[in-house]
Length: 327
Image (cartoon, rainbow, N blue to C red; front, side):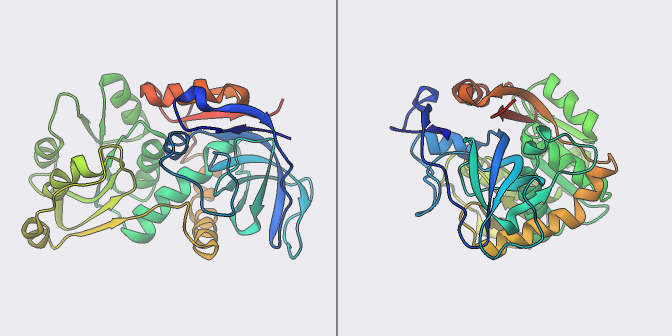
């Protein structure tokens, strides 16, 4: 088969289309013929040499895909050759085939085509696990989403609104904020022109956010704590603004706040399977009903993965950038 390889870390030009050995499904895995994959920030970090896949897993980037099952490994039940699926991956989505643990498979949701389904596994798993399973966002609470126009952000807005929460977002510029508003965001903050702590206080009568979903990391740590409501929960899922920051413990104690930080990739198989199962139970019906939908910015051929990475680097996209492996 062919895959996007990374012979040496670097810029987008480091992504090389090459012929590589076909994967073989191990115990409990299936082999998926990839139709589409999606680009995530973690892929950019892997390309740069900062986020290597766990030992013994696929060396190719790509944390989600959609496609068709072409082979069942030993011990797999409940799935059949020919099933159309999408999947959460530890890597390997930038390829024509990928081996996937059966517990990380999802059926293509009703009303979503096979290509677009590639935009769903990573964002739904990330948002549902962090905002709902860990931070326990409840109806009537306020969620602040940093990067509201990103793939994660566009999904977080919709899921939070679907459960009856109020949503605040930060994004860069009026066009991105307008897209967030279309998805249901109530409080729109242009981080280039406004201070999100001040704007959130004004919009919530000083209360702040009950849950904050943060992709920025160190740069926002102190201000995120200031933006929290009493008993607020800060969920950190990214490091775009650095890895080391100062934390005012007195401020956190005064808020009776909690901070969590997670990634999906390195979690044990059982944890990922539990998250995927919860997504199928809670999120898939919302997608099937049209309440929640994937937001796709553009689709490019897999061979042009470098161009897709440049799109994410530029920050001009809204929602997901997909890579079309076939067709």
